Length: 277
Image 1 (cartoon, rainbow, N blue to C red):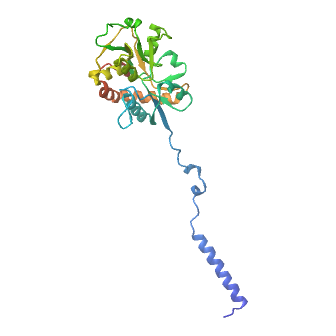
Image 2 (cartoon, one colour):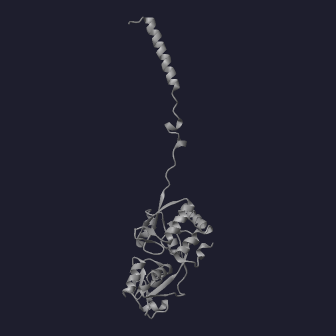
Image 3 (tube, helix red, strand yellow):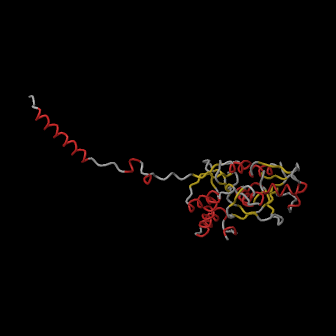
């Protein structure tokens, strides 16, 4: 059927009115859909990489599943939870551990690290979290009763540790009588196989080893000549923000008894002076 011009004009007007009405029923887009900055989700929190030399039981070691476990690990997890931090642990050889921190490959270190004035020149440390000192290990029949008796003997130490430092002072830094090893267990095994006459190492490690290896035939000697030491968590020099969070986390785990529970799980009841301000 053909239509007249008047009809066509009427039809067009009706279609335009309908189109306007339909467009008015559509919901206007929300501001967020065009990039409202107030609707942007927060960035995911950075996971902090914690370097640790996992060959120093009971502080840090690997279990049969290859997981990193120990007193230091449990403590830092608890501290991180209190501080609102997320952490993951990466096994890092002792000889390269400080360089890994300085280069940014690690965000912090926990590895039975003794706080010393020399290390403070390149690292920042948390408040102390563990009191330690050196001990001597010898065979049961060895004629050794004191640190001074080691002057003419072959002594095993872990490279770059405070045990290495004290033995180097006694025997001479370049003395061939000082035998340096990559890890504490290697030094102790060398003593058991008579490759060295004695080993000087941190008390917690040596006591743990002899307790778990009753057939090792080793005797432990405590000498008053060894100075008290304290362990700290290390961060890059000048990282005051992270250090403040760690120290607050340490204070919190001390205050609510978490530190004491972790300590007792590894060492039983004993001196924990580093938990006191």
